[in-house]
Image (cartoon, rainbow, N blue to C red; front, side, top):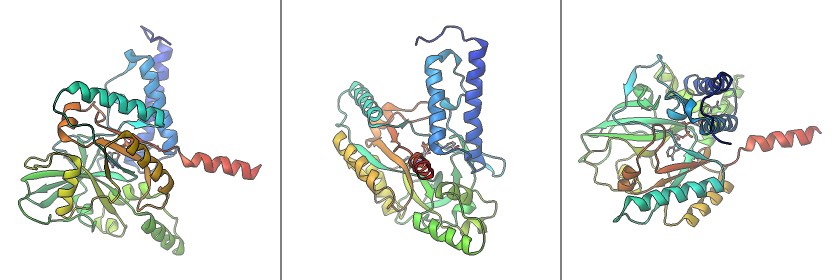
Length: 341
Ligand code: NAD
């Protein structure tokens, strides 16, 4: 199909309706922590919008959901401007798509020029929680914010103070003037089960899933309520990091660990694409016996200089990709149907 030159009013209407539908689900998910469709259904809707835009690029507006980091800072919390932007991740939904992404990334890296080391892929789990940005000044936690739209997040500092995994003061000495630590706040699977069992025993409604429970718990108005929820965190990145000598993601994790920050036991630096594929298969099998729920695997270029050279789009880094496993809800529904038949 060739892209049309002048979109008809009907086409534009169709496009606006699709974009609006994506926005509606984003608001329910990010602002209200109460999605009404599954993540797989949302991903399919988002993909539909991307495909529509690829066919009709003249329709794409700057405020399309495909051009922005999803979410916004709601009025319930004070706004916080992140010192450096937070991004989303590009998704791929099959090994073929991953293959194509890796080939494109390797070609871009090769074209960047001499002196770059062969690509080392830092491969880790995509934790199903919500992103947090922690600002430490001279080793002291001074502010914590949700991602929001990537530029402005919500101030949840007092709630984050109640999370035991997150140190108020970093261990060791010689901390930078300012460093932004990014991570994922989540509820461990076991703690989620126990928390829900206690709710049920009390005659209360259980929480729907660990991701929404984590988001709802972190975004409480009263920190005393947050303190009752079993929240944890793993780091997965850094924002502003002046004065940090580490030259790669893996080196940075080692440094953050030495400062007492929680790093994931699951990440690996892999020298080959075959290694990445083996990692994906391993965790496909183990995905239900992990500390936390996952909604995929994240593959990142480990080297910071190469990350910088590749840069970002308005929504995602060009040096990382999220591989999503096929949704399991579909299988369950199919099984249900089969049982009902
Ligand atoms: P994303 O969740 O696909 O990817 C970006 C986020 O991944 C980051 O902000 C970070 O918080 C997180 N992350 C987890 N582990 C990470 C790691 N190891 N390294 C880096 N980042 C890691 O993108 P998104 O734009 O935040 O949201 C899309 C997700 O939200 C999808 O899973 C989508 O299905 C879901 N969603 C669902 C609905 C719904 O209605 N069900 C609506 C909107 C979004």
